[in-house]
Length: 126
Image (cartoon, rainbow, N blue to C red; front, top):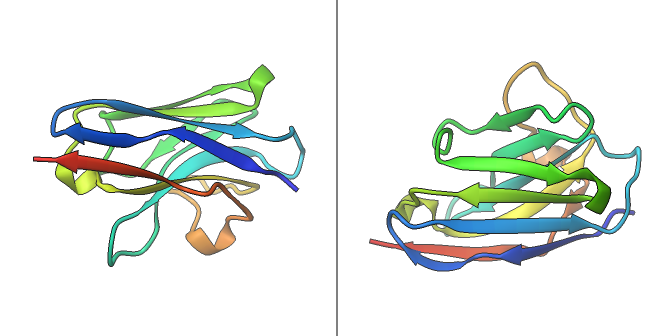
């Protein structure tokens, strides 16, 4: 079992920056990625960014590419999401996720993710 603990989040004005962090309780071969999903009110939870913990390869949803950067600290089993140029449409609860998955493109579906953090609110005001 992998426990994910998030930190960061909060409120910021449009154009501002925030950084989210997620610590995994243990390293395990039962996961090959860590990443972030988000869920806005009335919307489905969507994948935002992912990093493959072995290769360091990254994936992003188109709406955040160039503004968000995901990175990892492998010895500490942590992953961070640096968010810049934030927009009101980035407002959502952000969830850390982990699991085992691969596809040549895209991000995993919500239903395929076995491990979730508790979520942290990000609010961007205009």
